[in-house]
Image 1 (tube, helix red, strand yellow):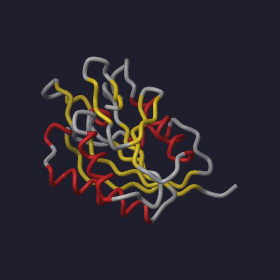
Image 2 (spheres, helix red, strand yellow):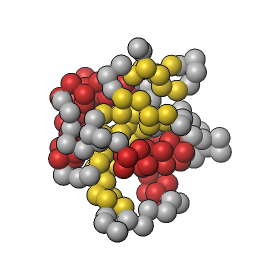
Image 3 (cartoon, helix red, strand yellow):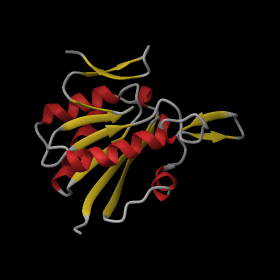
Image 4 (tube, helix red, strand yellow):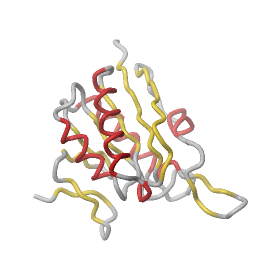
Length: 169
C-alpha cells in the first residue's frame, strides 16, 4: 500500500480552542490537532503539518485569507492533498480566496468545528475524520467537509441558523 502524503495547514479557529483556567475562557493558545490525530487509525497516511497561525477566524484580515490561500496551493503542489483547519466564521472567505488563485494540483479541503474539541458535545473529531476521507477521494479543487457534507467552492457560505455550511446556488 502506498503512502498518501497529506499536509495539514493549521490556522486556529474553534476546533483548536483550549480552556484557559486562569481566565475561564476558550482561546486559541495551543493546537490540539496532534491529540485528535492520535485517536485515529491512519496507517498509510504520511502527515506534514504547517502551523500558519493560531487565530480565531473573526480576527483574520484579508491578508490572512490570501496567506492561507497561497499556503494551501503551495502545499497542494507538494502533496497528494491538503486539509486546512480553520475557524468557521471566516472559513468561506479563505475558501473563496483559495479558489480565486485557480485549480490546485491536489484537493484542498477546509474543515473546522462549531464547538471546540475540548468540549464534550463537539463536532471537531467528526469533521476532521470526514476531511481526512474526503481529501483522499476528491479531484483537485477547493472544498469544505463538515457535518456529513462535502461542498465545492465557490459559492459556499456559513448558515449561522443551521450551524453548518451550505451552497448559495
